[in-house]
Image 1 (cartoon, rainbow, N blue to C red):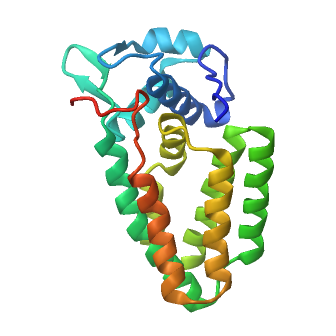
Image 2: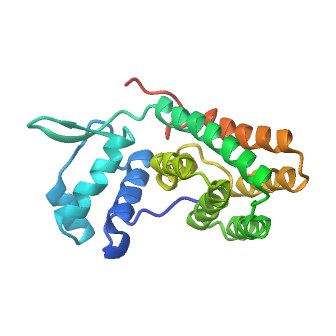
Length: 226
């Protein structure tokens, strides 16, 4: 898979500043640019991104919620050792949510098939262009369409709380997922939905996430101690 480019030293748009900083730090941590145990100093990060400390602080809070960093009283924020279990657990939860969302959307007849086809097309184009970011955006959008179609706000809030965009980035970097595989897997999931077999489609939605739970989510190919 083509290497993702870290925007670490470039100023970013203030519209989504905290999220862009979060995603940049995710890439830098997973790639090993920022090592486990390294301290993340807000003032230094703010200077490198050309912003104030506010967005950096928000980004670090989100990374802490994802268990990628930890804040130690009177000492600061440090990068945790990258543990496979963190992502595996998130994908297990996500599998349950997306299986339920698929069931609800199919029972309600609200699956936006055309939108899903467009996202699969976008994933294929991203694979041809070796564009990791575009592939990740299309993948997240595909699943968000199904979550929205389920019409269950609590389910949607739970799904959003998993910070899907950032975790997708982590998986793509850490597990070196091939972009062609992403497009193929989503096309297969879409086909099962289009065929109208409720149980098969729900099982496919669940297994799609379980597959990613089983991938080696470690930038160096092995589990590190926590």
